[in-house]
Each structure stands twice: as structure tokens, then as C-alpha cells.
Length: 197
Image 1 (cartoon, rainbow, N blue to C red):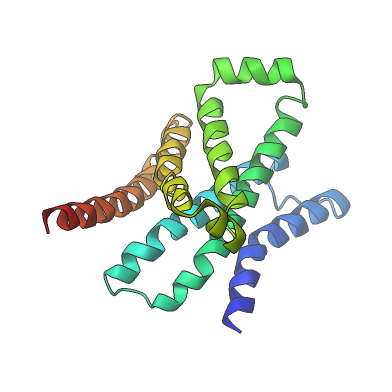
Image 2 (image 1 turned 30 degrees about the vertical axis):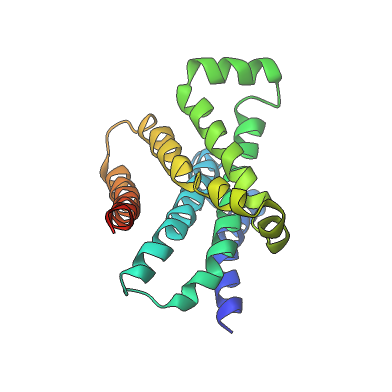
């Protein structure tokens, strides 16, 4: 039952967007606003970010006794869902902003550094998603743990990607920053204590 609820929650944002697109297209509603493509693009990116930050928080919150260990078994699914939302975000950008043109993409990467940073984060997330299975854990052994430490690098790239797009309202960015700093701080403190002991 728990697994079904988690999967439902992970799919719900995409289903809601799909219904909004269908309604705007066939019923002439304006649920997605005056610029539906921009709304969907931003929503996919925000959903990917929120799910990714949840994966960052699960372990430190468990270690602090704030959540049950039962949440650990869902971390992999949440992380993979985050990747697919980020991938959909990137594909929509390719469709509506560069038209699948390599030259247009090159210009975007040069003129908008946040695009390049986002692409780097997505590339790392791709590696994490591909290796988020038991077969990869056995095959890579100790290297698997090292690879998945890049989760924190993805978090930093995400913050940069987001910050460089903020124009006036920094409230949401501040929340994301606090979450990342908390996760990094908890891990750094734990490693420091281990080295001292």
C-alpha cells in the first residue's frame, strides 16, 4: 500500500500537467496560463528539483531520528522520478527553445550559462539513474558509492542553474539553498566526527 501511494504521488504532477495540456488544447481553458509551454517547462523543473531535494533529505533526517527508516526503501524510486522530470524538462526546452537544432543549442549554451550548468547536472543525474539498481551496485562495488556521492555536486549545480535564472523573488531559491546546506552540513559533520574518532 505504501509503495502504491508513493508511486501515485510521483506520477501525480505529470498527470496533472497532462490534464491541463489536454484541457487547454481541446476545451480552450487557460489552466496553464498565457504561455503553456513555459508553465510546463517550469513545473517540470521545479518538480524534478523538489523530488531531488527529498532524496537528499531522507538519510540525514533518518539519522537525526526525524523520520522512519522505512523511507529509505523509496529513496531510489524518488531519485529516478526526479531524473525523468528533469529529462522531460530538458526535452521540452529542446523542443520549444532550440527546435532540436545543434547550432541553436550551442548558442544557448554560450549565451546562457545556466543552460550549460543544467546540462551538466542532467548528465550526472543520468549516471545516477542508470546505476540505481542492484545489478549496478554489485558490478561497481565500492565505485558505486563513490559515484553516488556526486549527488551533492548535482545539488550544487542545480542551485547555480536556479540562481542564474532568478530575476527578483529569491524566496524559493532561499528555501532550496537551506535544504542543500542542511544536507551538506549534516554529512560534513558526520564525516568530521568519524575522522576525529
